[in-house]
Image 1: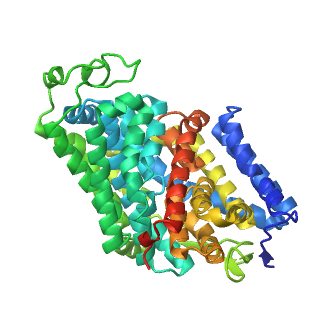
Image 2 (image 1 turned 135 degrees about the vertical axis):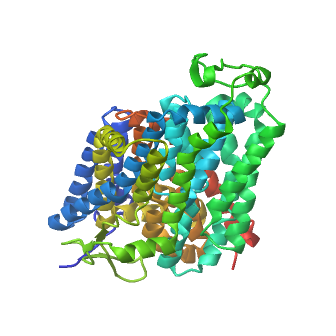
Length: 555
């Protein structure tokens, strides 16, 4: 039998929202304050979510457990599949010794940690976000930063902070495409509006990223490269999103940003090479902390052949990830084989109700093992091709893959439990209860519109999922308070990008990539302030666009 979601099970919206938040409070509290291991914290949060869904919201028990299993399965595939194979590619480069050469080539461009984090954590990560999304950029960027000699906590936190401005156009524009589908608003207007918000933060984030790592004075020393990385990303981001659409925004913007930074570094270098305070002289090309640029030039550099060989796996990865992100390729591969099932006791049996949607709408629940078109499969193939070209035998490749699997077994459990929690709160309607509480803020709703998107991504782990969850609510509330529905819907995606750095899925992925399993609470504490502060700035921009700079709204 069908079951209709109820958003005020306790009769009062704010009291209901407080109870709805309990699973998230338990999860984040266990991680951040009680130092519980991530998989146990996730299981505790899941237990609270199931209890809230069944006992408070009245969701049938069979349906609630089907929801949790659906979420756990999605956590393992495709999310876990991406994590396994991203780490597999990195392990191959380490096993063959090519990552050492890669470090030397990056040090040849810039030995300064501040410049390295901009190149890898911001610009290159944005390319991977644009091509694949869904956790891939954090896994790749964090692993590369670790290989370059960054401290594990810094590598994880900085990769998360850097992966913000590109997220709304990730996976070839999937979040904006999904937002247009659920709201029936023109995709061109949603893409353009988002492209009139995020470029401001594309300029801010490089400065913020370096400031978070090296302090304000350290950031000022490299302001030219921060500015170039940000502006070279922001201008194409605006132009492509407004005059073409959401599909290749990140691809074009990241390519321009990387090229611009590389060109700048041929004419400009920091006056001193910044290192982490406790970094030893032997780390990363044997260059001591604060060594002069002139002394850097004396270091032996890899030959062109060695450099090409070292970068080859990552170039192959980029090609595969880009190809696997193309709709035509995905559709072709899915046409070959894409086993899909309707989830028993769940598919079309949960009805979303007004005011979250205009009329009662059944919530679909299907699960696909799209093993051919999954981004993780593209990563696996890139690893196999790279390994063979680098001289590894099939047996050595298999041994490396098994070693990767052993490394990520507990994080996979964590990801499964996190997604089970997220799916349970979504299908039970408790996510919508928290969203309605934010949407009841009246004149200041434009500010909280961005915070609603932030909450959605923090809960679901995906800007796409947040747009599907709250897109209609944003549109309906905007009409009630008298602001543009296009502005509110776009701000859901723009605000959501700042929630990406604190969602449990991303934190676990960053922990795996940096070998910090069990330290997810430390990563959360590292990034939490940055996430809230940047989301609040997005909210302030949206508020100004709603009431002051109304000419920025397309229509």
